[in-house]
Length: 297
Image (cartoon, rainbow, N blue to C red):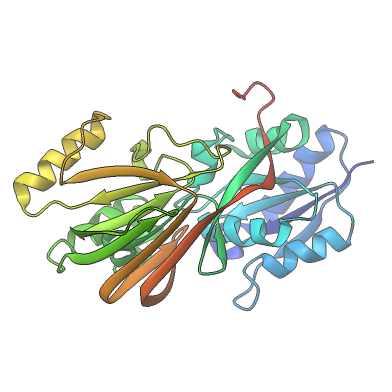
């Protein structure tokens, strides 16, 4: 009888015992054994637990938490040959949204045990892996200003409030080098590097992004005032392909960003130490993930 591990962030689940009962029951419906149940802690956000699950020779690992939990579990599974599935809880779940992994518990379990395995890329920022996006500037500053309490109370709207509170931050002077190309400098509000395209609210920042194309997508946003911000918002909402000094998009396998002052940085919703130099690269075909059987290839 096949067996899964469930790695859950207990802070993201209102009734942990009920959740465990429901997960076990759903797995039993599909003929799977009682799962190995592992809860994240401050000391181990999922990486070490994923390695433990691999050592226990499970057939599948479910990551149950926000984007940070999913990222940590994924990092622990890289190179193991064990696929991951995602049970959506928390305020982010951007990987689940981008790959249409389902939003209900029943959908998530069914995708894990009856779906197909897709091989996808990951990004690496200063040695840490991410599945969705990493960036410097406004998006990281937004996370700095968004508390766990506000996320719990307002959900995705908490991020909007966090972003609005940082709109007056000074722009970044950043020099970028993509692959082996020549360096170029921009005065931007943020630079995002994405493995997939969609963020909170279904907004498509990278309409052409594919998580298995061996490349990362780069977005440079440089609005200077209210009119510029409105123009950027309209173009992003309408998925306009037009680019100018306010919006530029690139693709690359390696990205280096150098700023004139330490900038806040994030990957998959987790903050990392501010810095002046950020190196990002793609890790091709690094992850096995379960997606719906009828999902587009």
